[in-house]
Length: 304
Image (cartoon, rainbow, N blue to C red; front, side, top):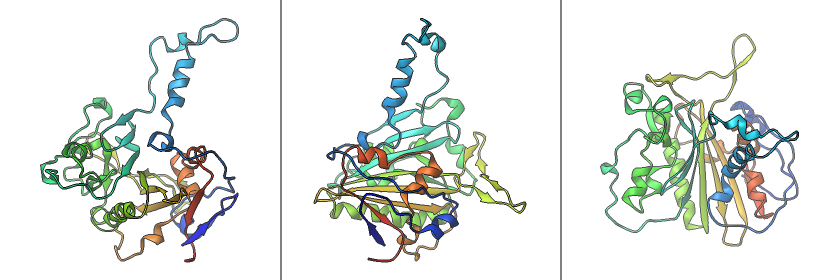
């Protein structure tokens, strides 16, 4: 791994990112104010932006026409956010899963009655029935119900763990990946709580293009069940680590939604954060840089 500091991001690991079909961005200048605690400043999609846009429709437009008239019969959709005891989630009605899930890991939870066996996967009734995944969609599909916010991350209370079993926090995941390499990445995330002040983890699906025989690029993915739950081609996980010395360290991983040997080092799946931002349509770095200029990215490359 190579640690990068300075006023501009350097693009590294191009071969790995290109192999995953990820685009790479150019340099980005670092800067910003003091760090701020909490999940809200780290959201890759800031909800107040959408809320402000909706509120702005009620303002008077030039010429005297009320823009609120446009929303007379409501807006057909804004990114739905769900705030639960163990995570914050932004839902994607088209894919029947989350765009992203953001959680804070707090280290070893105190012993208690928390029991994973007592948790059941369940449809998220807060999602409209047209856009909701059900357990029947997964039955016989050949895919695991892969947690985005992992259940083992939230042993602090039974409620927090149960919240991770909503199908809005789940995506169809290759069983070998879910139980092997992806599980190793989740364990690694939990281990980081021993050495960092705070560990924030943002996880989500990716639908990446690949070249077909005709030489053209296509985004193709399977859907399962009567509700057509989208099967991601890849998954990402972005780690935001608050170090004891006040620095912010950023680690970003992408894994294909296919069998991955668990013996492959996790460093093999490190990618530049720009590649995830471009592929997902999300932004992480600008929100972080509003709070601190002490940002360090762990990039793919040679061990330092």
